[in-house]
Length: 217
Image (cartoon, rainbow, N blue to C red; front, side, top):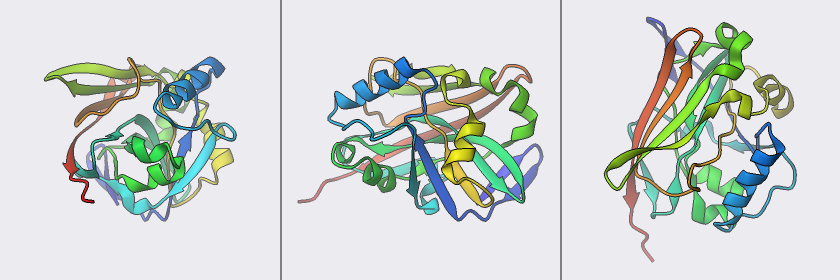
């Protein structure tokens, strides 16, 4: 899969994809996320965090993804990739089928494509100030862009911990968990996401739309 770093192109041979869930660093934040998902019928996790395996073929740079039915939504997440011993950080959306999630979280993670940013940074360039990086997701709701998720990586478990405990390594990619939804988890068809580095005054962006396929009985 191809990405960009500064003025060059990168080609990664990815063979494993992990989606880390329930990764809030603050216990109250994790409970809040469990409660907001419980409100839409999702059973609480057996342990936290959890590392779901999904097909690496779900990752996409497409600006529009197809989903089945109206019950899906995205989540802004930091993304880690490793190849040849070098770790990179980018941006992804763990787009999830919320209706299926009520029956199986693992299945809901596998059913939707995962939009990812074109651009990556070397992890070592941000490692020393990683907690200051800002995640933001905006959705188009009633023809108005509103902030749906926002916060720094201090709200997510240390990425070093997630890498160590997940099985992450060479030729792997991991979506590292998300932030609580402002106003509760809900669906949308247009997303704008950012990973901002206030120390270096840099930003990675991700935008995509959702095309809803009909449910045929």
